[in-house]
Image (cartoon, rainbow over all chains, first blue to last red; front, side, top):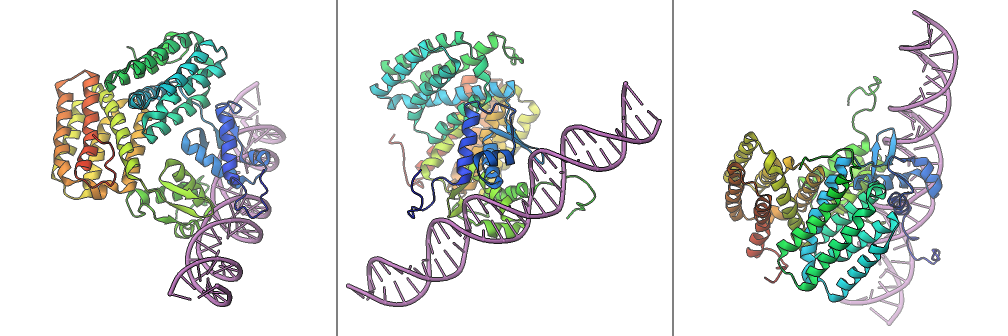
Amino acid sequence: MQPEHSSTGPSGPSKHELAYRRIRQRILDGRYQPGHRLVLSTLARELDVSPVPVREAIRRLEAEGLVSFERNVGARVATLGDDDWVQLVEMLALLDGYAFAAAAPQMTAELIRTARDLNAQLRLEQTHERVMALHREFHRTIYRCCGNRHVIEALEWIWDRIDASRVLASLYPLLRVRTAVDEHDALLDQLERGEDDARVLEACAREHNLNTIRAIRASGTMKVAGSGH
Amino acid sequence: MQPEHSSTGPSGPSKHELAYRRIRQRILDGRYQPGHRLVLSTLARELDVSPVPVREAIRRLEAEGLVSFERNVGARVATLGDDDWVQLVEMLALLDGYAFAAAAPQMTAELIRTARDLNAQLRLEQTHERVMALHREFHRTIYRCCGNRHVIEALEWIWDRIDASRVLASLYPLLRVRTAVDEHDALLDQLERGEDDARVLEACAREHNLNTIRAIRASGTMKVAGSGH
DNA sequence: CTCCATCCGATCGTATATGATTGTGTGGGT
DNA sequence: ACCCACACAATCATATACGATCGGATGGAG
């Protein structure tokens, strides 16, 4: 909205950047669900740009794994298979566990309190949407302190893909929330207690994340039960 | 120049795909070194396509982190800071360690022998280029069996970024190779011995990878010594 | 000699135009 | 009734065209 005539250089974000952000946003918040077709010309009209910047945006989203593209056919919002989902959460557990241990020494009392607050809100929340958002924010508060930028980015990437897949939107059992909240508090307890064995911290945080897979498998909602043990 | 008139469908890979592959290849093998400017029109001429597909290719490479792009200025091959490098290898250690433990149960005697062979070649190799390639191939042979596609892709992604950065091309001390080879054999020994404690396997493999960071820090080649201890 | 205003060339950003490919619907043949 | 050939519509793939922007070269003022 700035006065772009006053020779202020580039008028805001470029068209392709704008297209990228808007499409991405719509995928992440569920307006474009998995499988939804993304027609270049249509998007171009909607966003009031030419098809070229839209193509660039789609390419980026494709590279991020949020969109799948087939030549001469078109793009659609990526669909996550059950295996993919499990493997993504496994990787999430791995990274988040590591990040938790690495973040422990940097966590201030202030930050721990923030996390406790988020967790408290999470305990009361009812809607899937809010639960997901708070849960993610809780973890983010911690792993942001882990000191490894690439690990942080990878975690954000995984969460984005999970959000986009809408899998948890229907599966995540409210049942699990209660347990998760307790585990969160237990993790924060360790931080306050000054537990300093990185191996212990990492293992606990990893297990907490893996419990999500176990809970969903136990609820029998997934088609492929996967590993036998 | 295949006869693309004979209604043979799409004439091979699309132009943008071709551009993507070729540019990517040149970045990975060092023909385009970090900082190298990637001018759209020039590349378009060289690859004999219009600038549009080249732009798409660049966008993908940008999303992968191999290329950095500045508006109205252009693209260049991404440069890796020392911190970035350390953090990437840290993440590599994390993922590779996990993958090693996860792969252990699937490793056939055949595969272990392949790995031993690669390691034996590595022991004799002299040139940096071959050392890097063999070292990567050794690890790949194992982590490919880990069963988690996303972890595998993340590992490939990290190795690609490391290759592109050319950091190890100059830094990786041939000194370290000897130690690394011994550690590799020790890891394979564990597999053959039937060590089945995932925690032990993961920890050993992780340490092996972290040793690379330690070795380079010790050699004093890095500008930022990083962690104090 | 140094510094700043201006200009110009290189390069990017986007729109438009056109050919190519895919999938689909329709009509005839069996 | 079923199957295949053909034609058409939707959509993608790429080329070309042109305006916008940036960074460095140029030339004058202090």
